[in-house]
Amino acid sequence: MATGQTPILKVEGNVGKRMEWSYEALSRLPKTDQVEDVSRLVSGMAGSGVRIRALLKESNPLPKADHITFHSQDGKFAASIPLQDAVENGILIYKRDGGPLPDSKGGPIRLIVPHGDNACSNVKSVIKMELTIGKGKDTTTGDPDHDNPEIHGHSHDHTHDHDHGQDHDHGHPH
Image (cartoon, rainbow, N blue to C red):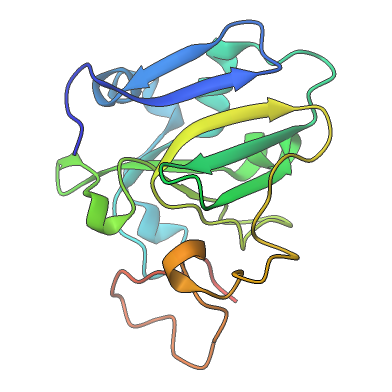
């Protein structure tokens, strides 16, 4: 689990300024972009996060960039979503119980997109955001491992109740 000034997230690709973010740097982003309780937006999720738009303000996306790809630490999972949806709806969970998000809960950073067309985009252990021209790497669709919870972060078996208040691997309502 990363703490302090150790970089836990990179923002790169089609940006005016490549950035590296530590836990402390994310914590210092404007309060208006902080989400203190993500469970108010996504039932069953716990923790605090920051809106993706705050990080993008600092990185200055290039005009042609139209997608953003979120890459997992192990390289097995990625989700590429339209940049506009990420700006309007995307949240990066990086805190839980007053400290860094534990690896066991998807740390160091976990992507959620509570509303919009990409509510199924849920990447655990995010370490890189890559702005692209056109869709980037995406293991959420057309991938034989799409329903493998060890790779995808959740299964699409939606036979259980999402309103049980416990943190689970879905990260999105259906």
